[in-house]
Length: 459
Ligand code: UDX
Image 1 (cartoon, rainbow, N blue to C red):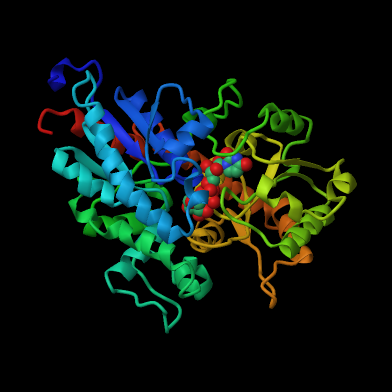
Image 2: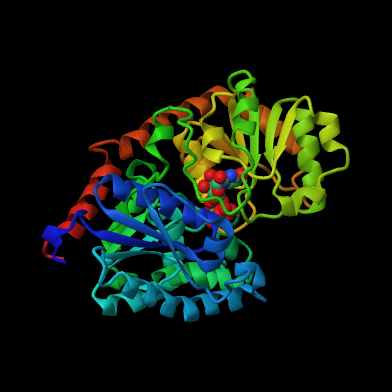
C-alpha cells in the first residue's frame, strides 16, 4: 500500500528491553505516536505476553521470542546467557514478526528499538526500515558511557573528580555503579556500553529526557550525534493534574491489586503528609537494610506507603506492619503515577531509577534517593546537586544506610529547613516538564518532526 493511501501516517514497531523500566517509557512513547496519528505496536516477549495478557488501549501489543517462552529471564542461568539468547532467538523472531505485517494493510515502516538491543538495527536495516534507537536512561548517564566506549575515559578511573563536557564534576560515588565499583556486573556494563555499538547507523536517536532538564549535555552530545529529546513520556493526563480517569495506563509485570487501595488510602491523608517508598522493579535490599528502612520510616513518624514486592516480603521485620498499621500501607506493587500525582505524597523515598526520578520530578515530588546500582548513583547526583529536587542518603562504613540516617533524610525533605526550597524546585521542574510535552514544547516539537519525517514521502 502506498503511503498516501494509508489510513494512518506510518506503522511504528517499538521494541523495549523486556523489563519494567524499559517497557513503561516505550509504551507511553507509543501512545504519543498514536495521538499524532501513527499506528504503534509495542513488542514484548512471548513470556510477558502470555503471563500478563497485556491490553493497552490505543497501542497494539505483539510478541517475539527471547528463547525463554516458559519463564522469561528467570529461566536463564545467568544474565550473559539471557542476553545471548535474547539476541540469537530475538533477531529471527523480530524479522518474522515484521514479515507477518508485510502484506497486511499496515506493514511496518519504522522500528524504534531500545538502545540496549543494538542488534535490532542490524536485522531491520536490511529490510529497508527506518531504525530509531531509544535511550531509556538520562542523557548525562549515556554520555558517560559514550566516553568509556570511545576510550575517552578509562575504567578503573585513577583520578577524581572526572570532568566530562556538559556534566558537573563527578566524584566516584556519582558514577554509574559499573564505574564506581569496577568489575561489577560485567554483562550489564557491556550492555550499556554497547548502546553505542552501531548508533551511527541509526536514523534517529531518541532520549527519554527533556531539553531544559539536561540542556548542556544534550547540546554537547548532539554535536557528536544529533539527539531527539522526547520526554517525559508520562501520560499528559498526570502532568495536567487530573487525578483519576478510571484508566490504568501501564503494562505491569507485577500483580497490581486494586489500584484504588492506594488512592483511597492516600485520599484520607493530609496534603504532603505521606512518604512513598519504592525501589522499582529490580533492586533487592538485604535483610538488615530492610530492617533499617522499616525502623527509619517508623522513627520519622510520617505516614508511609511502601511497595514491597513479593520477593522482598520475607525480609520485613516480624510484626512491623502490626506495629505501624496506623501509619503505613504496604502493597506489593503500586499504580506509581497515580500515587505520585496524589497531593498527599510529600516525598518519594526511592532507588533513583530513571523512570522513578523523572516521574517524581515531572510531578513535583521531592525525593530522598538511596541508589542501589546502574544509573541510579548518577541520577542521585543530578537529583541532589543539579536539579536540587531531593537529597541522597549517606552509607555508613558497613555499607548500610542506618535508621537514623533514613529518619533524618525523610525529616529533612518533609519538614526540615530545606524542605520548602526543595519543594519549590520540584514544582518548577513540574512546570517545565509539562511545558516540554505540551503543544509547541521542545519534546512535542521534536516528536512532530520525527512523525513528519516518518510520514513524508522521501522515506
Ligand atoms: C531499571 C533501573 O533500576 C533504572 O535505574 C533504569 O534507569 C531502568 O531500569 P527499575 O528498577 O524498574 O528500572 O526502576 P525505574 O526506572 O524507576 O522504573 C520502574 C517503573 O515501574 C516506573 O515507571 C514506575 O512508575 C513503575 N512502578 C514501580 C510501578 O508502576 N509501581 C511500583 O510499585 C513500582
